[in-house]
Length: 600
Image (cartoon, rainbow, N blue to C red; front, top):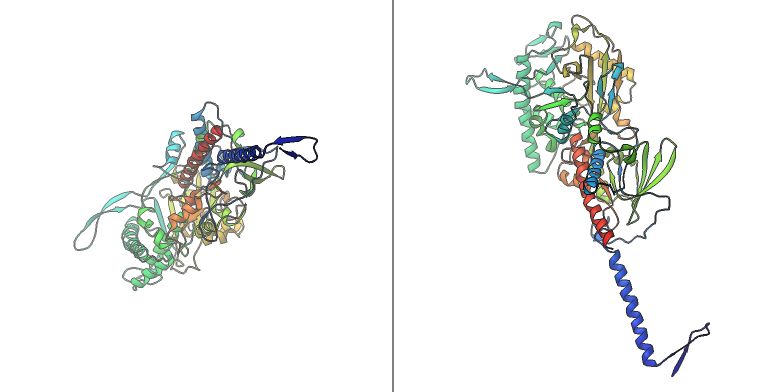
């Protein structure tokens, strides 16, 4: 018999040798079994997913020690960052789905917004310029009818004005065949020439434009727009787009214009056709995409000349009873904002180094304190401009593929100069035009010598309740350069151009009040919306998918939404769609997480 003594203890264990080995073996098996059970209880697809290795893009497992939240931390299921259209649509989706599952919501959801209001780049001003009931929009202004936002507008009876590009008329050409076709009428548009300028006609006969011949008549305008612009220029650009995509190449819209001039060698720089093409291209492209034609991809946007820019009916929200904020209020009507939304919260850091929780640091601008929240999933809906400016510190740094997507997509700027007159002498007012634009001799294709604030929307003709408001638009590089000027300098330029357009009768007086936007310098947006820059068209759909693609350790934790992630980019509709799409994905993962917790 062997006596085995446990040192330091006054106890003796008496075993036979065979019993000792059997007992030891059974203890080892028990320890292994307990360890195996513990491992599989902690394992699930949600907390053991793969993440990309930045160096070789191979799928590798990452191991990081978990960091427990402090006792005073509120652990959320989903934390949404940003209260623009993608953020509010995600919030509405998650809360409504949560309620559908149970009469008592069980998900902990919160939205952090830097401002003291929702809407992001949709910013509505009510009782504008001291007029009760007058609405104006500082950011997004249009709603596409056959979209989710169009349905939302109709459901909540939000008022709007209408601009219809697609008004047609029958036209018989003057050629020997007398061909009959359908032309756009362009009744909504007023085209004005430089006063007292000299423009060669098609027969190179110099014609002086006097005060009685400032606005182009309908026949002249229709010939230029339908035949010269849409048929000639539009067809040329679309063919160039097809050619570039076939060879996987690209050029800017400005370079495509220069190519057109080479084809049309007989068109001199001061020809009215050339000046009109340059002016109208800048007006439509630069406002539509927020980027200068020197920066826009022909391979991506060339086809929009006829498909997107000149056809369709759009609803204008700067009217009494209108407003994007009313649509947001309707969308969130059943949601307690005090419970789900936290305003004045500027996110500064997102830490996803813990495989279980994401810690978000934000500045409470009311108390000037840094605070943190922890969440299982985070949805980032800030603008691409904020991501480009690195205003949020990600830890660990975002993967190379994510940073590449952020840099590859362009982010443009569109600004407004909103001019209001109390009771002007109105003989000069363009009552019959919804949009007015000025063409000058500088519109000759010289990209460094163009004028600013030459296109205005006539809010009065867009059913704004009879108020005298003209809203000037400017986009791209010029928009950013104009932000350096004072309000007074911007208004002086706009007023000078209006006086060049409208002559005879009363002189255009200075506006009573005005508002100038500067979205490029807005700290919470750093611009307006995304575009495809020259050279980036190939694989852009995948790039937008990478921008939306989540990051995290072992499982997706931080998701990204916003107009820049959606195929319908540069629109509030694209932002809305992306928010709901990413929220639905997070919802699926959250449901799986709960099932795992319940069965663990």
